[in-house]
Length: 221
Image (cartoon, rainbow, N blue to C red; front, side):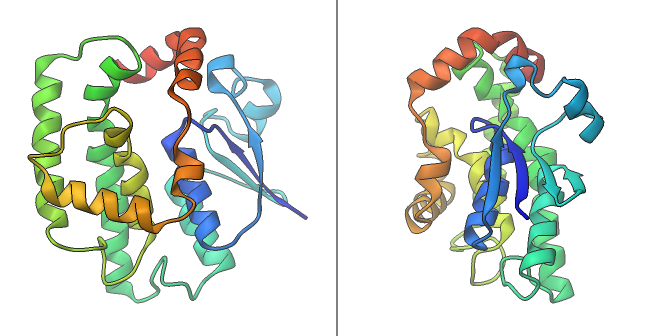
């Protein structure tokens, strides 16, 4: 039986799961679900996922939501020996730390630029300053490393890469963050499926924003 993933192509949370599955050669049955059209608010969806978030995994009756939990589950369930999610406790702890850092700081902080790029709303100056400070910290943490943990790709790289790809989408000036810029360019080139999953015509996104702006503003404010 297939493994279903309820996903939305513009959601970075969903794209991290799709990239993880692709790296592990897991064939997911993608069910496109548009939150802007309230498709996550149907009785059927809420019964499956009471918090009506995306993505949601249905692995033959096992339901799981929260993108990082799904990424970890796919590794543990279908590729327990993969270096994508190291088994060694210390390395795994470092991967988990990045996953938590990404959700707590990088993901939340990026709304400072998303408000303007996709919501048409000028962000408060303090959000802009806070995001620049965050990028500086991220640049320092990456340093001259090719990967975030060890000498190979992990789900930490996938998570932070997808979250940070917003910088490429809006042509953000990364001159002051050379390590981050190099790291982004390296991985987006190295991973053959990155563009397929993460790059889409801007006009398509603009059309979705036009009909779903209320949803975006709720998420960003």
